[in-house]
Image (cartoon, rainbow, N blue to C red; front, top):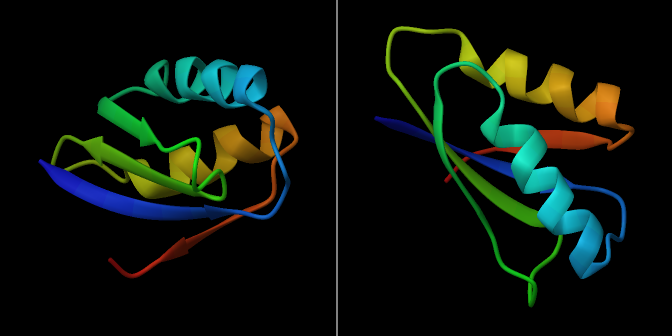
Length: 73
């Protein structure tokens, strides 16, 4: 498994964060998504190796209407 740390620019409430987690879990090869309500701008996404999943993650977030950046862990 690989992990990517995502920074979300928008302020999202708890309901939207829960919805966003479900959206991210629907991305192929994503196995886990962690969002901490105390740190709503941070998301950790685990995905299977050997796939270009980070770009798919950013693309899905963009289609969801969220601006994001991949940052180093």
